[in-house]
Amino acid sequence: MLFQTLDDKRDCVGIYLDGELLYDKLPEGLSQTWDYSTFLQDTDVEFAKIYCGGKSLEEVCPPHLHTEWESVRNKLQAYFRSFQFAKVSLGENCFFDLVPERFLMDYCSVRNRITAHVFETYERPDNYDFIRSLVGALDDIRYQKLNISMDGIRDIYHKAETRKFVKRVQQYSPYCRYNAWGTKTGRLTSTPGSFPVLTLDKKYRSVLTPSNDWFLELDYNAAELRVALGLAGGEQPSEDIHAWNIENIFGGEIDRPEAKRSIFAWLYGGKNISSKLATNDEDVGRLLEERYRKAEIVGQHWSGTHVSTRFGRTIPSDHHHSLSYIIQSSCVDIVLRRLIRIHDRLKRTKSRVAFTLHDSIVIDLSNEDRGMIPELINLFAETELGHFKVNVQAGRNFGSMRELPLNSKRSTKPQIP
Image 1 (cartoon, rainbow, N blue to C red):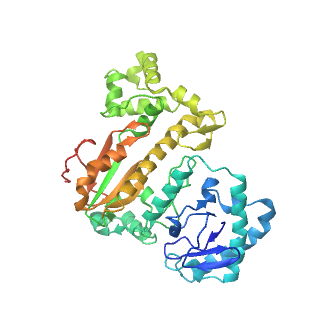
Image 2: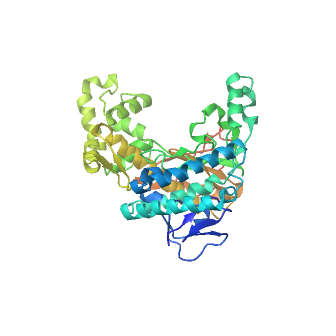
Image 3: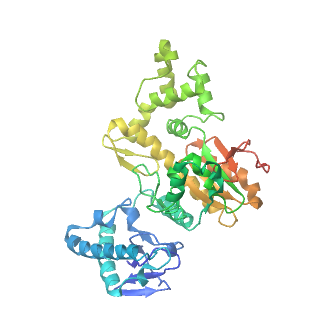
C-alpha cells in the first residue's frame, strides 16, 4: 500500500493513506512511501527517494503535476517561514500539529502521485539495501545529543576568532545530522543547522566530549591507496603503506612526505614524482603501474560517460575524473559499510557511534565496553577489498585524541591512555 508520512520523527507517528490521515498506530500492509521516517525503522517499507538516488520531489515531479506541486510547495514554504518567525521548533513539535489537516491532505495527495511515478519509472538500485541500512544508522545518530563544552578551549578564549566560533556554535543544533546524498561520490554532508562536525577546525575539537567515558576513533592507514590496491587485486601490506612504497617502489630514496606527494601525483593524473627520482622516473612509473594498475581500474569501471563502482554507485564522469571518482566513492562506501556494522554491534551496549568524519568513525565508548575494542577494530579492518591497517586513537575529548598502540588482531583488553 502506497502512503505518505506526516513527519519523520520518532514520536510523531502519522500517515496519509487512501485519502485519510491516521495517527499513532500503523496499519498492516504498508509497502511504499517517499522517504524514511524513524517510526518506519522496523518495517519492510520501500522508499522512493532511494530509488531515485536522493533526488528531491521537485526533480522527479512529472510534468503533469508541476502546477499542483508548486502550489502545495509554496504553501509549505510559507508555513516554514511562519514557524521560523514565531520561533516554533520543528524539532520539538510534530509538523502535523502545526498545520491545517486540509493542507496535509492536499500536500500528501500530490506527494503520493509523485512517489508512485518514481516507483513506476525508476529501477530498484543495486545498493538499495545498503542505503536503507545507512539511512537508518544515520537516523539513530541524529537523535544523540552532543556534549559540547567550552572548557576545552578556555586557554584560547581570549582570541577574537575563538569568541566568534563560540557565538557561531550557539546557533547550531547540538546534533549530528547527515545528508546521505550530499555529494555524487556518496560522501556525507551535514544538514543545515546541525553541528558542523565535518568542518570543525582541529583547534576547536576539544569542545566535543563523550557522553560515556572516551572517544575512540578508527580510521584507515592511507585509505585511498588501499582502495586502489584492492581494486587492482593486490594484497594489502600489514605495515604503513607509504613505508612499503618507499622500500618496494621508490627504492628507499625518499622520505614519507615525498613518497605521499609522489604517489598521489602519479595516481590522480600527474607525473610530478619526487625530483630525487628524476633519473629513474620510468622505472618508478612502471613499478607503480604494476602495483596499482590505475589504467586497468579505469578500464573496468568507466564506460566513457559514467563510472560504475563495485558498490553499486553510478556517477557521470569524464576520463580525467574517472579514477578519483572510482577510488573516492569506493572508499566512502567501505567506511559507511563499516559504520553500519559497528552501529549494529553496539546496539545492546552503552557505547555508540557518535559521528563519522569522512574516512573515520568516532565511537562514544563506555568503560564497561573497553574489552570490545579489538572486535570493533577488526569489524572496521575487514573490508570488501581486504584487511586494511587501522589507526586507533582515544581521548577524553575530541581534541585530545592519542594513538592506541595495539594490533587490530589483538584480543586482549587495551589500556586507554
